[in-house]
Length: 294
Image 1: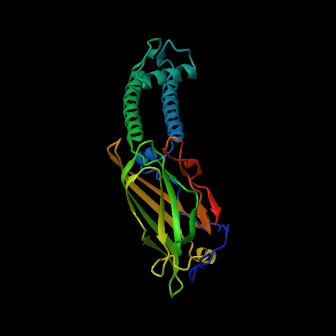
Image 2: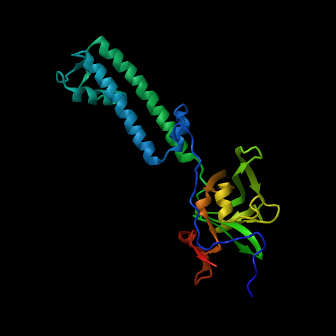
Image 3: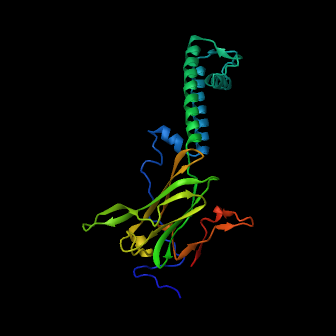
């Protein structure tokens, strides 16, 4: 016999609430006043493109300086910007093939400055590249949807995550918080952050998958959650993960965000863990976001 949902719990199967706002910062995604943080946070493709763009820009500037005084480069074709550009590239990289060389005091001064810039640029890019490679990453797979459903007769919010590493993560912990839009008695809107109590917020060993649960009872900030409630409060959920990777001997961290459009009611996660013919426990993380109506 099916259990009746508790009072205050309303569910609409398959309903998706459009997000009414997202968290952004005025003035752009990145802070250009902190170039180190920018270089570490961007993707690898953006990092490579940034490296190429800065390198080309520096060489274009120095090539223009050589061209500003004719005869600065020995054995270069008169008026050839290509020769000046490639000479600049070789000088910036401290290669110096010897076919072209500075021919005047002015050219020697420009070449000296360029060599110093090239050595500094190489050192900086080498250090940032090492940091990007050496930075430990959690590699956690998150379900695309958080679900609100009945679990053991109680309305519960669930978020499933998976260990996307080959090895184990030890002493894993999770914290789920929600940013809610409130309105004061004076009619002013403000946002409050609430830390949600989890049924279990720690795992000694995170091997395959972990379904994080928050029971929505009378003490929960989500009490009475429904599609209308989502529209009124515009919640943004933040799931913070932390654990220790034994292979790296380092702590790994990650944060994932869910908005109102990422909440599914009266659904459940499709099972992704199975046992093969040899008795090994396997998890298909390609199905971690799969849900089905109850």
